[in-house]
Length: 164
Length: 164
Image 1: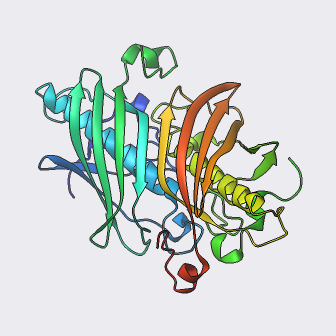
Image 2: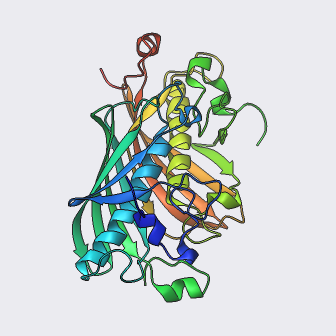
Image 3: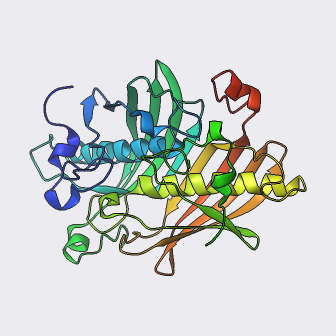
């Protein structure tokens, strides 16, 4: 993919996530883009991302990617629902209230994962997202997430309280 | 805690997980121990484990810790249910079929997390586990997981197929 990713529009104060923060030097810096009605993220894992058996991803990596990619989809979808394109307004940051992952088959590490996120519902500050993670053309895991829009005041107080 | 952790009993072929494998040099190497009827894991996060806002954990870390700690609890509980103590028989390895995490409040990074896992049900090769993750005395996240016991033949074929 080319051009700025959704994560590149996160405000600096929200851009430190290990999974998706452009400002986290040690982090994975995943990148998500609109692809039609879905958000798409391609991520190439490293050999040390293995589960117990070498060559296949550990479950926590899969959960992390689904979580961070889903959060980007929620942010971008909320902005779009409000009538704006990326860059036209500050992007709200969303955090997961709940995450459900179903592990369907082992995800091999010697390839690039493709994650696709689809926003199912936007209800005020709540956004529900479904995500699939595929490797070599097969869906290895699916995720269902409920995200809550952070409010700026909660950051100004130094406490990212996700709910009122 | 002292002495060998549950993870230290994993067979070498299963000990490469980024979250909990003693043989993964780049990994987090979490350690879980029996504490009465629960399995206990203490984990001290690093500053780079932050979510979007510095100072609080990213969701994927919390999911990873719950997943790996729950897997250890499932392994040890299955062994105990079969009538053996740690070290008396080879420890079976379990992988998550599903993971549900509820994020209740932000988990601060300037402390040590305490994870407690309780096995709710053992049904043949299926083990259901509940986990809590606490920081500074407050429960920040809860997890519910279904684990499946790996079979040795699946590893010998190079494919850790979790289900028959």
